[in-house]
Length: 383
Image (cartoon, rainbow, N blue to C red; front, top):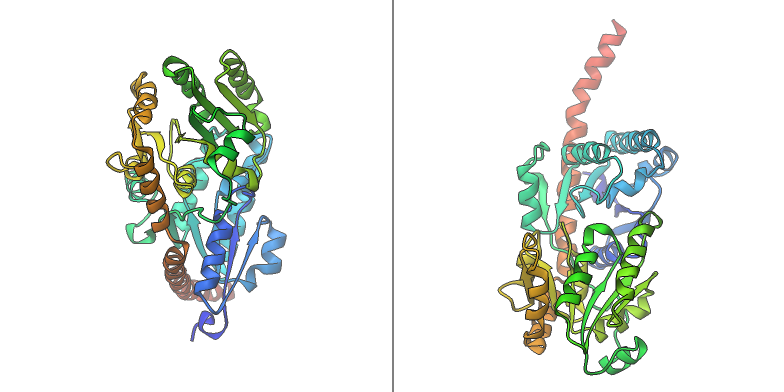
């Protein structure tokens, strides 16, 4: 009888992301599905943590691994990465199953990308289960030479954010709160402000095609290292009174004001694997404007949930902003919300639990396969 059959399944979600409720929503849904399950979150994967708690867990589920080896220098980052991989290998040697969720194939705007490549290659090869949110990412992984067998890649969609944030304010209340005209057509970008998200192109496209009553709102936090980029955006926005840029953390209770004030959300990314931003928009019944790359064609569908544009076309985003004004927003809102509801955490939690069982089976086989090698090594030392 396996240890998971003798006592509750013990799962640790490892993440240093604090402003995205993804991990919390997943954990709560799994606890609701599994009567015998202990679940907790850690932001510490140090050797000391592993020594203290490694023997107490069955599954380590890793999210956004690059945040666990941050440092100001290349060698500092390399040492931190070596320590992280050592911890993960040590946990696996104890029989802990490692599950890795691919939120990004590689971190965006990394200062030393070769380190991230090494980290990703190690995880792709060593994780018992690699979890992706969509077939597009699974296909990308199959194209890259990362040694990941297809049967270890599990496709489990990204869950919705319905009820994750308060949603009681009306459109009129939201527009008053943000000082937006009631009759304006409002485009919204809500999320972390970073260069790879292409916001300078959104400002330029909006300026080219916006009417007098149109408005663009950009809101979200920014990293200190992106200060120059943010200042550039603010200077560009200052010449157009129709544009608001609100830099800073958006509290959970204020997300509803931005979403409910908007007619449509714009995600002008240069690259994307998973888009929590799209699921957030859909969860508030907002269609999206997005490039034809990554998961967006599937998310937008045949146009019922928004507008796609060719990111290689310099005028593509501007045309898409115009096309957005011609959408049947009521129908698009209903379609977006229906899509979000279909990504139900309860159903997805059941799939994650099945992935954990498969990961633990692989971990048991790994330990069993390692026993003869250890015996041979012990015999060799005795000789």
